Image 1 (cartoon, rainbow, N blue to C red):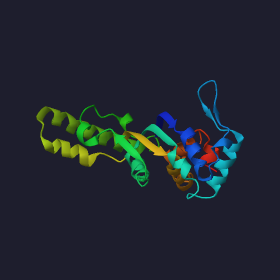
Image 2: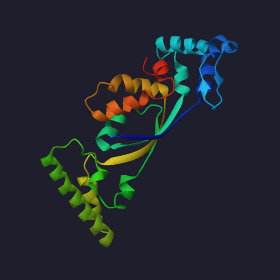
Image 3: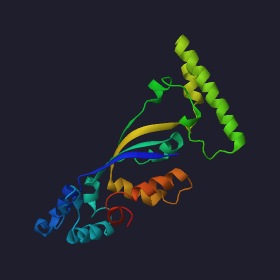
Image 4: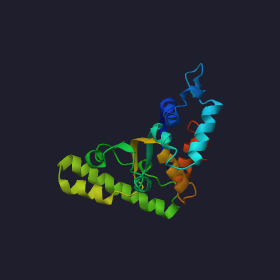
Length: 204
């Protein structure tokens, strides 16, 4: 399971102005804001962006200035793979260490939708065990019960993080993960394709 919510894409106008800095060609820019306040790339700016992106990462530095902020809820097993993309990404996550005991454990806190029936029953037993330790920790404040929760917690546990990254990060992720065996990566790459000018600037 993965959810991507509250997406914001910022700084396209400034990034495109920077793309014209090397040749002092700002006067050729033909992008504009429409009546809804959306920044629309003109044909000349599209052409420049396409050429720079196709020329490689050294030439498409401007895409590093296009920023994306999004809230992602995903299982820990997916976050372990996402965390390989640390360069120029920033994340604030919900705290497992400090808040693991703050709410009742429930099956919907975990990504287990692809488990078979027998494994799902095993998962329910794990959730019940976590909940017993949570209740005992709240009652006694004994650290042992907190340790039980931290060490038993499955990698299918869903965590929400607010992520800020740039289009260059997304180029690398899309190319590396679009054919990955994890369903969550396919859904993530589908989200990438919905971003402004993704076909021109990310998935080319």
